[in-house]
Amino acid sequence: MYKLILFLASLFFFISCKKDDASKDPFKESFVQLSTHKLTTYSIESNSKYLVVFESGLGNDHSVWQTKKVAENISAKMDVVIYDRAGYGKSTIDSTPRDINRLRIELESVVNKYAKDRKVILVGHSLGGMIIRDFAIKNPGIIAAVLFIDPSHENYNHPTQAVEDTLYNSIYNASGPNFGGTKEARELIENAQYMATLPNLPNIPVVVLTSMKPDSSHSSADKQNWYDAHELLKNGVTDFTHIATINSGHDIMIDEPGLVIDNFNLLISKLP
Image (cartoon, rainbow, N blue to C red; front, side):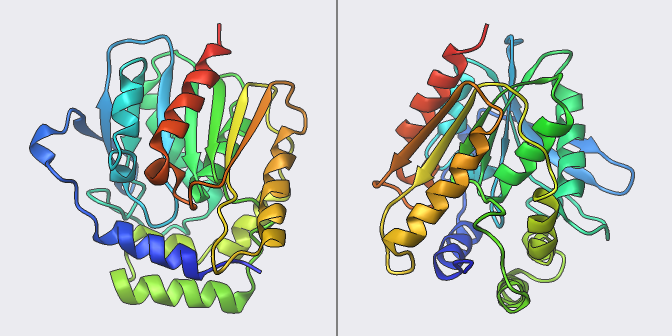
C-alpha cells in the first residue's frame, strides 16, 4: 500500500516553508524558456569538470536543497543547478500532463542550458528519483553518476486510484489546480506503469540512501520492502552503494544533510 500520511505531513511542511534570508542566497536566478512555459533556475557556477543538477520530490520546490545548505556545500566542489519544476515557485506551467516522461524532457532542457559539453551528476529525492533515473537511461552518454535519496520506485509505489485521488484532492485543496504538485499527483499510477517498462540504469557509479527509520505508518516489513525496491537499482550496475539510515525520515537531506554530503563526496571520488 502506498503510504500517504507521512508524505502529506512533509508535503505541507515544505509548501509552507520560506527561505530564512533570501538576501544571502548565493545562487544566481535565471530561467529556461520552453515553447509554452518557463522553468526558473538557480545556479552557482565556476566551470567545474562536472555539473550537478538536483531534482526535488513531489510538492517541493528548489529551496528544499537549501534548507540545510546541501546544495551550497556541494557547490564548493562542483557547479550546481537547482530549479523549480513547472508550477512551482516562479516557474510557469502549461496544460501538458506532468508525468515522468514530460518531467524528464524538461530536466533535459535544464541540463542542456548549463552542461556546456560536461557530464552531469544527478541528485534526486522521492519522485525526483524517478525523473533522474529516466534521464540517466535516456541519456547514458552525458550522465556521470547518480545519487538517489529515498527514491520512489514502482516495485513499492503502486497506488490505487483511490489513493491517488486522495493525494490529488489534498494537494488541490491546499495549493490549487495549477500548482505543479497537484498536476504531478494526478500521474502517480501512470508513472509507476511507465517506470516498470524501463531498462536498467547505465553502468555508472550509483549511490542510494534509504530511510529505514520506524514510524507509525511504516512497519518493519514495509520498510524492508522499501529497501528491497531500492536494491533493484543495482541491476546492471557494477559500482553500486546502498546506505540505509534509521536516523532520518523520508526527507534525508533535511534530517541528515551530512549523510547526503558525505555520500555525494563518495560518489565523486569514483569519477575520473
